Image (tube, rainbow, N blue to C red; front, side, top):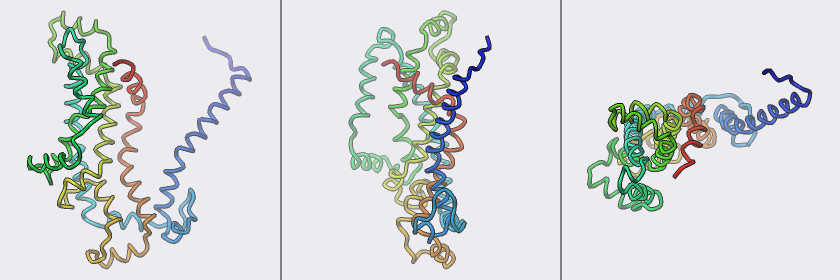
Length: 294
């Protein structure tokens, strides 16, 4: 039945959309401000003259950030980390969450295993034992030092197993009656129904791997093995003119610390900003549906 729009309803819709537009603008303004700073001159940014539009438009900040070959190398390392770390984490997350989503009568000591994983969120061995362990395993300065420690993200496991526990048990029972085993039930029944929460977990995993910078600094002795975030974190802070060419020094003279940091912020955030719109429609439903049961 088509509902006629009364003046009161039209007024409500106008006020509602206006409020949502204001909220969206408030959320976008910081990013717009950072973009304006990155395209502004050094003097204008340092003087605080930049608001939402670039002053004395220039791309020097991006030229400085992208001028070194190390940037391309670190970008490729970051892509390699995503290509290895994300599929590995997603596979292990599904394989851990599926059996833990079963009831105790089907999986003995299920609660014990769940608490075993939860404890790892509350307590950890510390940074020094973590470093020593990877050193003894000869993983330092390798891509595995960046991917294996994050192979089983426990928060994502809990999110996924809670979602699976909320699915009707009759689906799995019907699959077993039809002759399907655990693997067939997982990949042909549970997996297709878990797309919303899987998209959420995928987004979390991508953001975690892409934004991580500290592990690259402590686990990579060779700067050529830095992922993108580790490189961008050091490219401004650790400026050493002795290792810069004449062209780099000329660009640096026209770039301030503020404009360069704004440029590196946009460069680092751009891939996630491009991926998020494709996963956004699953994000809210995945969070809500994966957090209602324990």
